Length: 46
Image (cartoon, rainbow, N blue to C red; front, top):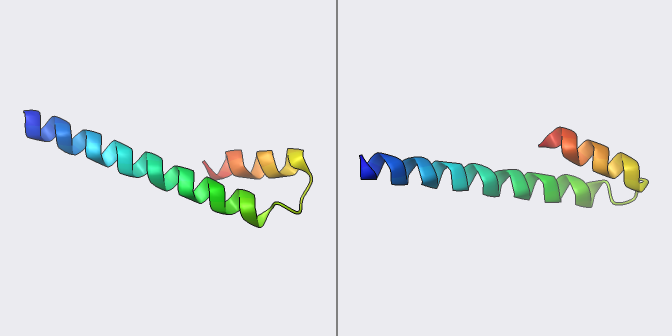
């Protein structure tokens, strides 16, 4: 049971890290856009 819990936690942390990285990449790619468009596209990517 503990191993399954730790495995689930690891998967959640990996998914969270991937989400942060993807959001950061999209925000960087759209940094030339106006702020509200950048925030909108970054939120959609999440």
